[in-house]
Image 1 (spheres, rainbow, N blue to C red):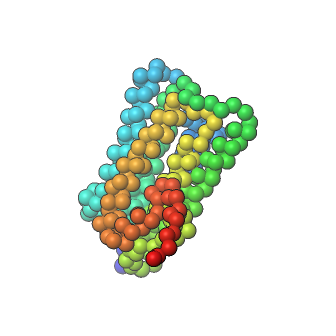
Image 2 (tube, rainbow, N blue to C red):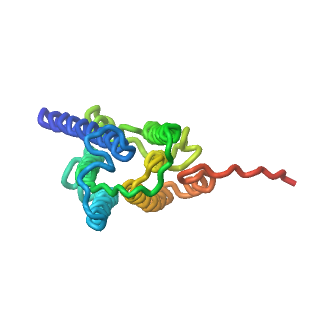
Image 3 (cartoon, one colour):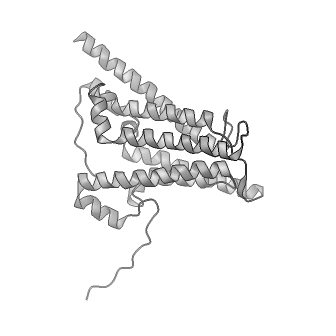
Length: 253
């Protein structure tokens, strides 16, 4: 009994470390893509010839996509939870994502060719404000679901407290009444809001955008499978990433 308690406490400690690492990676992600003061931002680092830099950067984006997609599949989760406690499966997923992000940040090769540039301090302030609004939406939306479950901390906490996992229920609140995936909406706004976009910035933001769209296709398919008509009706009424235009009500005759 005592050994079991120690294992549960170790799982909670492990998940706590994974949580802190994942939040740190997300904060670094914001600094990296928006050129804020971090050890290495998206346009920092030694310059390589364009084909080599593109090869490295596209490879890094592919690495992120493979890891994120593979570990999100039910078959992989089933394989993993036969080897580790199900309580730390989500935390392990977050840790793996953090390590891949660290590789992307460290090995990213800058591509300094300017794709667009809007000069002036007002433009810089406007786009930076818009970017932070996007990141704010992303973080707030995680709490409108269950922030700590999303980052893998809630599951071992329940186990530590001896609580069972409640059944999944479909709930729509706050941002989720406006768009179906506000976390991803915030990420897109945060990544693309810049007054000066280099080729490297566009490759990174474009790769992440492509992954988000592909990932949402599979996520929506799973949600329809899980919630059926309820989710189909929600999908009809609410835009995926940006609000749908309001439909005019017609008088019944």
